Length: 194
Image (cartoon, rainbow, N blue to C red; front, side):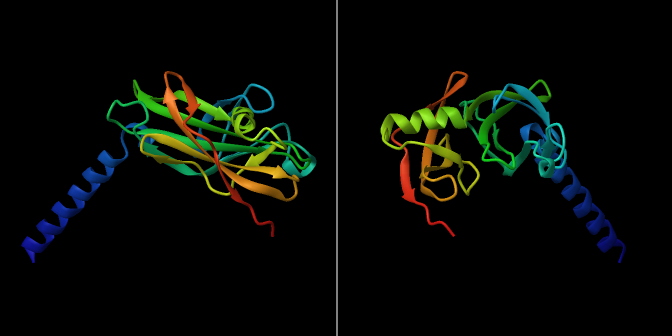
């Protein structure tokens, strides 16, 4: 029984050390309770609490709501062989005001440091380059961003009406210095309104 207790204690200590090591670097940053500098609608700092920030009042009273979309995703974007984080923030108001911003962070000197951002205006410009006719980007897609092969994959709902967009456009961005640049033509999929 004594050997079992010692073995169990060792396993618990090892699990605690492993869990502590797993939560170092960028993965230790709590992005749902984090201050983001954003350029959506106007440059400002939004302080998310539990993944949300109501700007000036409540959403129900007509004020913008900023929300973390999904969970952070991790991967090496800048080639330093350590994980970076990508998060998406969506902004909406009871009117048709919608915007989104995807931000990438690295971990430097014990804190998150922004590498680059993609906002809905950049996505709209990139979309218009390839699809100039009826090229509205309405708001973020249904899926949060992903990292694939060192690129950030972002979705946006495009064309048609605001109430019923025609397409989901999928963008692939690569980090170049302190900016994201589009890597190839956005891929469109028909969006089915419900």
